[in-house]
Image 1 (cartoon, rainbow, N blue to C red):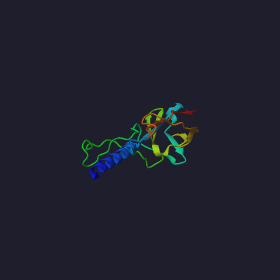
Image 2 (image 1 turned 30 degrees about the vertical axis):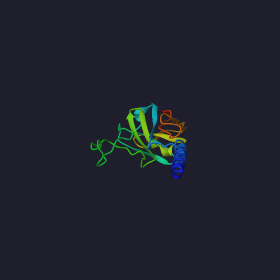
Image 3 (image 1 turned 120 degrees about the vertical axis):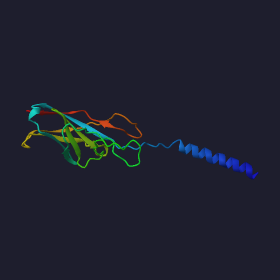
Image 4 (image 1 turned 90 degrees about the horizontal axis):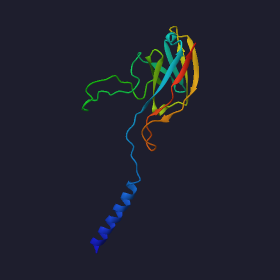
Length: 163
């Protein structure tokens, strides 16, 4: 008789365990960085820098035409990571990392954990005088991942008109 109850008890425990395991959901690790693009219209040649600010602070400028997306880093002991490539951290030291990607286009990288609802963008001349400034509300849309785990997001480009 003990053997019969042991098998029955094990079967009930297994059924209860499988029922709860089926309900759990594990999300993959994520460290998404989002890009906000600013397109300068008008006198783009007069613009030396575009600055972006939010409640978290203002942008830090990177060298012109540098990639504004995270790239791989060298990790000792990890196969395939022994060749360094340019790296911009997923969590920038400034609120935004900005770079000019074209004569009239700027890209700002921001950590997904700190997505602002609105930003202020400024076009600055070589003498750091403000040529144009505007506040923009941002609408974020998920472009990958899943409802349960989230994923990368995007917002439409900002158009900054410079006289």
